[in-house]
Amino acid sequence: MSRLQPSAAASASAAAAAATPIPPASASSSALPHTVPRGLVSASSLSTRLSAGEVAYICGGAASNCRLDGRTRLDLRPFSVRTGVLPQANGSASIHLQDTHVLVTVTLTMVEPEMEEEEQGGASGVGMVKCNVEHSAAAAIELDEREVAATNALLSNELTRLLSSSHALPLSSLVVIPDQQVWCVHVDALIVSNDGNVLDAMMLATKAALVTTTIPPIEVVAGDGGASEIIVNDDPFSCIFLPGVSRTVPLAVSLCKMPAIGATVNVAGQGDTTAAGGGGGGGEWILDPTAMEESCCSTRLTLSIAPDGRLSGMSQSGISTISCAAFRAIMDHLPKLGMELDRKLMRMLRESGVKMEGEERRKKQTATTATTSSAKVETPPASKQKQPTTIAKTTVTTSAQTKSNSNNKKQISNNASNSKKKKKKAQSTAMEE
Image 1 (cartoon, one colour):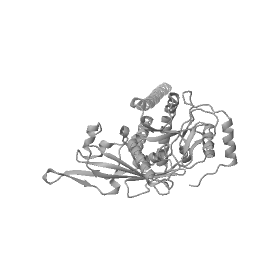
Image 2: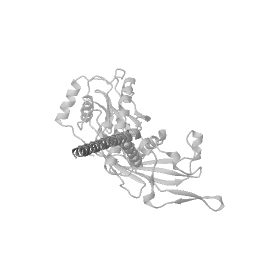
Image 3: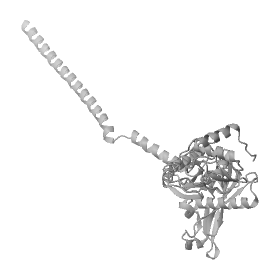
Image 4: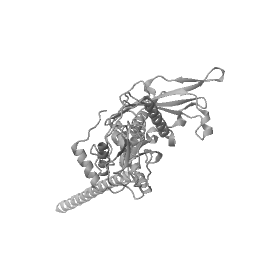
């Protein structure tokens, strides 16, 4: 990565930020300078080399609510998602969070369950989750081998913790033969390029891969000697999805706390650097930090948020503290943000026409709701349906009978009058004779 040289405009902005008093983020924040060790925040940081002017410019932008890319402190970068990128895996997805690119594959293998987990308070004899994170050579170009190994181990443990906590995966449904054979879900992530916030990007790609992961149907039959035999159906069109992952797998939402103006920052290769001297204060929290912002921040807070907004996990790294008022504000805002992010991801997958878990259930619920509403509209009560017809028939029949009776009466009266006329005519003729 080429070193960024601060421009005249950046220096002027930094000087203006130093001259303008910045209010502290919270009243309980310490005004003492704090030092950020190299590579501290979320081992995903690439320890971008920054000068004192660049640090001042980045911290001043966060303080004035205008970051390097024009976002405010609580704005997220747009992302794009692709699924099915590796047909050999049970599920795969790639995420582009601007210049952060992560590829995740999900592979299932049949293994023996780990029974010793029961002594540690975990579930015994259920499915397993194993995660592995690797950096590409391009993403780790500024890290030596030991830093790359430490970074991969930290991210692997963090990803495993997020997927193993609060029943994120239906491990009990992955049992093939109780206490003998279970499915093991291998989640492998490759960081192709890293421009910050790689953990959140990994969780987005992991969920997109898990909701499209399919399992071949299996049948357990009794073999010779009482041993069980497993028959795997190799028809790709008969595979089933992992049950319930669209409603249980959480997403990660991370914030970084930027140093206040005048705080001491330990920048990679530069030693202790002061962020544009001047005021004190506790600094500002920002969402979705870039690699440069991660290199300047003092602490990182990551929340694991389920699709229903429930908090399923939390982790903090760094040396700065979080005040009670700041934590309450974070808890008021981030669960809603996590729910919106989950809905956006699922909507993007549906609009792209991807077959995934939960889509058939959603279509059935929609069809059932439509059928029920149409049945309510098209099927009125029987009494209201027959009564008008009966009344109409009765009315028509009565009017016809009345008309017929009146015609009969007229005919009878006409016949009577004719007979009287004939009698009178006969009498008059007889008298004349």
